[in-house]
Image 1 (cartoon, rainbow, N blue to C red):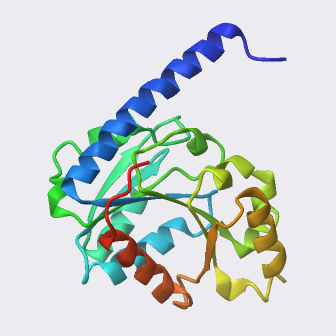
Image 2 (tube, helix red, strand yellow; image 1 turned 90 degrees about the horizontal axis):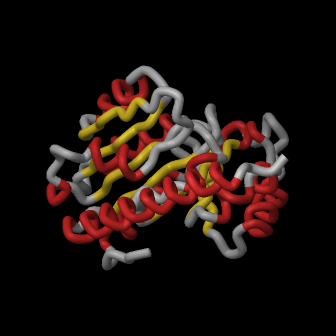
Length: 225
């Protein structure tokens, strides 16, 4: 059964408001000179582990901070603060994604000019976050080798709206017989030409490439979307 006209209208209004707020956020980020990276994935892909490792590696060379979204608890924020970076939890309750208003409120008392890189870790979900612009420069979608090569085909919208694909838990690829060629073909089928970085937060494989990519991106002129 299709959605009622009323529900469609309400959803369109919500997304329009979000887009307007996201545009304002993007202008604020541009004015402050901070490069914003959002991370999206399904639960268990290793998103928080990657962010913790990334914050620790990047912090000596850049001023970094992170917003982390979850339905409940501040466990991830507590974990990420071990990197000594500025971290704030956004608890969404029953909402399965972050939106621009949540980000705006979380940043209310932060001086963005004090940052070079801001990470936004979204709620573990590959469906809802695809519709919500957060004002970011870059959206990175994560998939782990343990989830299978067909993730992009199952969730094409999130891959199509992302700028970069990260394949995590590379150290487990042989054990789970992960097909690298098939994974890259599936990503390219959904988002032709998208860059793919394979890495392991546990062993450090691929982390140099990822952090160098980030630092280089942060130094580039700000790109408005």
